[in-house]
Image (tube, rainbow, N blue to C red; front, side, top):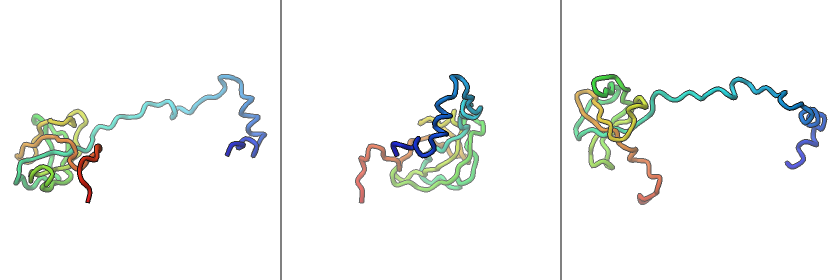
Length: 121
């Protein structure tokens, strides 16, 4: 709608007559956005690693997150693929983690195909 200011001209005129510097934005506009403390990552474990659902993720002996779910992954050649929430400091690809006496590695999301290289059915 190109002529929206003609619907209520008195409001448009009042807004146009505000002196410079009179507008005070809400403090919510200028506040910094909080950074997330955790993020979701994919973790690859050796084939046959069981009992990973709901267990704690540790990095170098320190608690870093929790596994949400784990299933065998055909995209990873039968390895167990776990999704978990982990501290952002440890969310880089290649980070070695420990879960329930199993050693795993943070990997890129195997189901995510941004270049669309996989065939579709």
